[in-house]
Length: 167
Image (tube, rainbow, N blue to C red; front, side, top):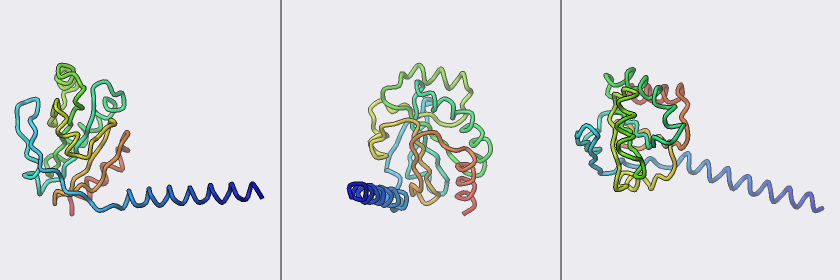
């Protein structure tokens, strides 16, 4: 009897977790925040003015091994889709050391925009991002259509971007 009771409790908890995950996965897309940021090359980016483009925002840090491992894939995505109106914006976490960010940009020859979020404004605007890497995909209408914490799967992200560019 005790085993049956434990099984019922575990089944119930599993269903609740699955329902929560389903709700999170299928939640309504959020609008991109009304945010202006400055890149390390002193370019100002107005997120609201990027409508009509697909945007991939990556929150990262130079001391995050998974973040650094993603950089070659991000460069490939940028090279493949930038001419088709994909923008990649890498936003460094507030704790990251600016000189390390600039050095990594030069060392890895990163072609996409990099933002130093020294005051944490972008972190807050995108929902209080805490973990890196966090990838956020924004469609042409300025809607956040996907958010993932942890390393992205290159082929899946490539396919998603291709679909959003075509739509």
